[in-house]
Image (cartoon, rainbow, N blue to C red; front, side):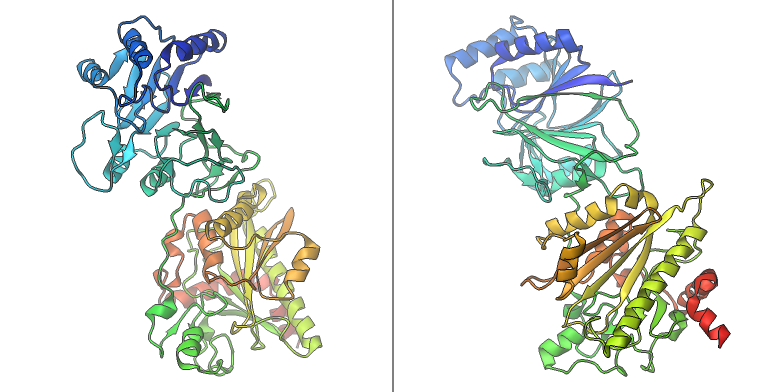
Length: 547
């Protein structure tokens, strides 16, 4: 059963007026409890006689707190007399008013889990800090969430790092400190509401967290002080059911989480010797490919010839045991170091990560010649993709007759590339239906300060005349294309597509191919299963049989 809750920004010693207004609201709304997210008391260093008298009235019981209220430790120290009373009364300041310690995890009588980290960030150490001191460490943020997988409400003085990334809401005054440990806490607990306090009101668009569907959604709200002259929002009331399941449908305007930390690795090209080979090439593949870009930059080597390219069938070292189908101008292969595993999509029996590779050795479609061959290649690439989609429909059809899987195809096309190809990966159809895939790519692009995706048909056609990154999102009921121009002066992450989908599928640890190595026997087994599953849809095989 849902309960009504109210959260208030910093009070700063204005107890009489604030609690009087709260009493009026409570009489109408019957709140389960209230939370004060900012500083309760006025700053002791600059407190006036009126501030001190207000505090004295509260402590001697002249001011009534109308309902059970928790106050967080804000960014300033509590008055000495307040700390003494809290120590004596085990955290209760007066009837109905209790403190959320600098690190607190409580469960209310109504069943709500509240987690709080109060005070200013004091580094990463394990130093001893008084119970009600207005400071916290990274260790505090880690410890408070230990053993918990979720929370209804999180309250912090500092904001999570990157919280404003990818959002449309603007915050124009000085922001509270943003810290990684608070971002990690929010990511770990996936609270339904995350509150803070600031000089002005800020509400970010809701965001969903990584993991299986349905996805937990968090709303981050920072409230202005009570009585602020700008009349910014200082109070927020809402209804909530304790420990409710994640929503089946995302709320309007929901984005992917901006809090997922981007732990950038050195490019493989920076770690490899000039004469070694790696899987990721200039087009972001997961198949073997020489480190051409480093060789060219450091040794001024010419581009590889087809006999040197690991995507060319004429290369004697081409990994032919992974090939699943060969058409007239295009062939399919299972991915080297696939993002997904056999367990990711068990209905398929193999990982499902497939590469569609033109036989002709060119970095872009537009570079392929003659025009007739170019058109034939595009047609066959599209036919193969459609065949793979048909395979997914049949293999993942549920009792309702609808496919449980959709798919994402992505490509990097630029003149400095080596051998164009498409990557194809199944995704749960709910991710497509709920817009999670689109939101995930949009959010990661915003996190990395990349150009925005263009989604209109006419606009994408214009971009595809130059260098671009393209995503095609598909289900039985939907097809959507997103194109990002790559002509700007920025460093594009070659694993961008794989990184986004890894986060969405909960496979972040498999973002890089080198974390997903397989033996030749395992690669061969996956390719054989794929060929068996795909045989019914393999038009290239049909042509061979007819001949």
